Image 1 (spheres, rainbow, N blue to C red):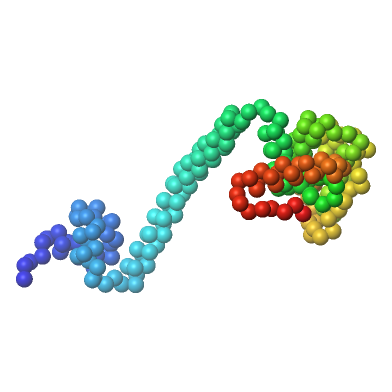
Image 2: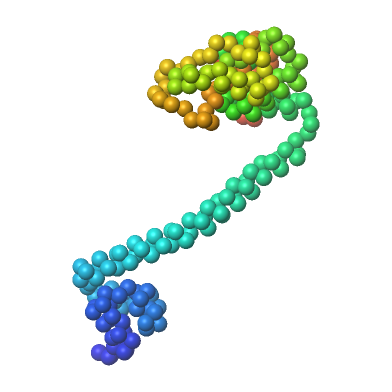
Length: 234
């Protein structure tokens, strides 16, 4: 049997007597970790040595995670910005065409609008969505303003702020207070208070059966033209 080299004997002693990790032994001996694993895997460690190695591993992982966190955040932030900009760039390829504008509004209505009754109705917590809906209705269809109405939907906890919130929505939409129907309250909500950035849900309704069917016709026909399955209007 060949004698063990001195470096192996040293590695075994460091492992057995001090319970050092492969990384620690590598720094002392210069022996690569794969070789150390082959040499030292059969050497048992005491419970105290195992506990020490586990604690060291935990600290190393925590330190690595702390260093990696800001790096990953920055990487993800840049990736999100690039993805967002890619979406913005798509608009450059869209023609300034009424049909495109109608399709965009029709798809929004198909996804978020209420299809019941003879009306075009959309609701959102985002005033930009409601403004876009109003702008689309007015520019595309030259609507009768008398058929247009609004309603505010709030949780019970916001009842004392109703007038303030109505005023806020009037300013956001450049609408008259008289255009808002009686506020509706969601009795199912268990919220006991609302934050300062809470503004409820605003619903805009335009009563016109034929316009509703036109918009649904655009949306459903576009979708059906892209695949073989038929979608029925409900």
